Image (cartoon, rainbow, N blue to C red):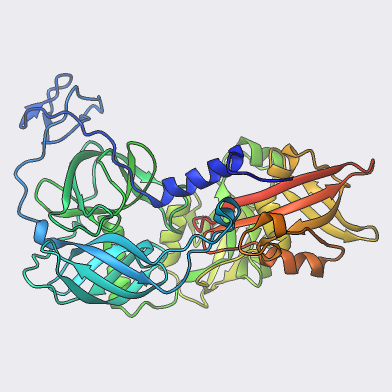
Length: 487
């Protein structure tokens, strides 16, 4: 099969990646008067509110925030010089070369005269980091630490005239609360940081796929590309969040202030090892509950376990429904991640789970979390493509096809034989005309090929199957790597 740029799935994948790494610039809410009351329940409306915090009804107009303290000197532009290529198998297919970058532009804000908070993605592959002030001058910065779990990094730099911001740890953000997002658009022409008004339109958002721990604030404030790492400020000028990403026009996401505080504290403590179970967990829905015969009260399901992980050693299997971990009910991934942040490497924690209709339990000894968790080759094929494969006398035979998966759409069936694969090693600089399919006969062959399907940001592998009638079925298994479910 010859793939061209017009292929819908490839355009969709590329566009999806751009949506995740870029920040949108949606329309702002129309202004209204401050110090107003809700026309429905007469409760006071804080400046900038688009929803009444008392009755929850949408207001016809939103007030602009109250006079904001001068915060421009607190926000700087982050410039990261990159010492590696941003590798992407999907982009290699589209552009016939690796997506090469030389620098990343983002934003940061001061929390002390010499310390700055930013988004960890702004430091991807960075060999040198500088902070650029609004007067255009650049100052060298040192990376104190990165909390890749939460997505917060801490930098140190000597930038004159900085006014540190206060991170609001003691009061959670509220639906309808007004805010101003600040940061620098992705341009080398630095002047004043941009300010965009909006409101908090959602809390506890997760499942976006940006960070392992996702408990995001959602906002309608305009967040153009480059603002990631910049602060979200309340009407008093205190930080209630840090811009991190978006998935659609008008929907931006931010790390809440309490999570910023946790990350900064962890970095100040010397970034001790984080503990993990080593299970890839997804949200339970009607489909996977039915597939694994799980009761309706199960909220989270183990899809895979990682190689050599505590979960695998303790006997957890794909399809087990988590009930509780460390005595805390397993309701969502953010809560479980937060629970495990309080655990130590080597600690034995009780885990309760459902295997079908039977409730089971195990004490799992937590291990240190690796920087880049990767599934085994066979598990990668099943998780990303939906094909469970095993070795038999006649080759690598499909033993399971996950409903509605990529391979099922391509009409691959149980009993089909996997004959050949194409990975990123099989084309020269992405030139597809020079690429070739490689036969796979054993699990060792498959392991070698699947291990090369991983890049920095995605997983992509071509698969060719043959059924009992001799008909061939081809499927491209491509997806963006999301660390969120790695518990």
